[in-house]
Image 1 (cartoon, helix red, strand yellow):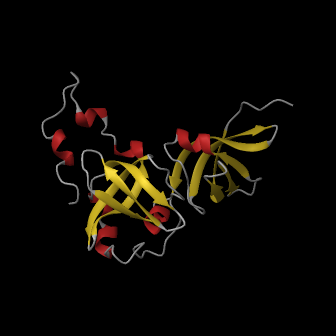
Image 2: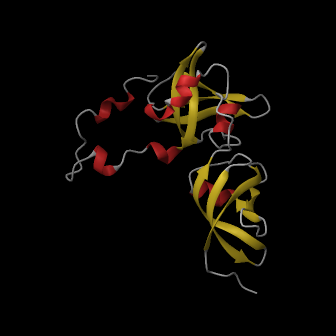
Image 3: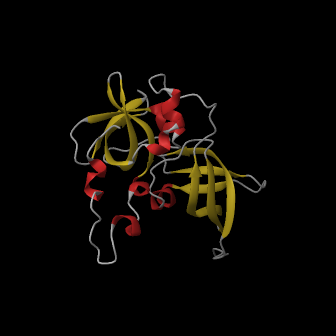
Length: 198
């Protein structure tokens, strides 16, 4: 029996995903069989992991080994109770997260068992603290050393800390917003990284 080339859009919840194993499963919200989510498919979406109970939309296909995700369309973090993921994040910060700029960064290290790690924003040497609960609230399960991400940064009582994390490509400026038709950057675009925390 050969793989079925037809793709179908499915929405469901991540049952579990283990970055070290390189795969996990999605529960089809329409009650179908569990859907295999391979790390390669997730990486094509710009992520190395996804938090359990995240809501995902994926294109799936029937294969000899069962139903598998072929493409990730969208990931929504797990539902939260509306409280900040950690006490150092004021509820007002959470309410206005979208107003903070997304900063391109690279993971310096992250230890899931310790529950934290650090990243460095491109062009800045300061470490940015990443708490595992912020990671989970952002829909990630883990981060790999050197992984490219985007972060919204706030000044915490002990220094810079990530308030939200997203896939690396979510911070790329749209071509029409950053350049004119000639490819020249608009004035002021260089200043978008002038301040690390705002």
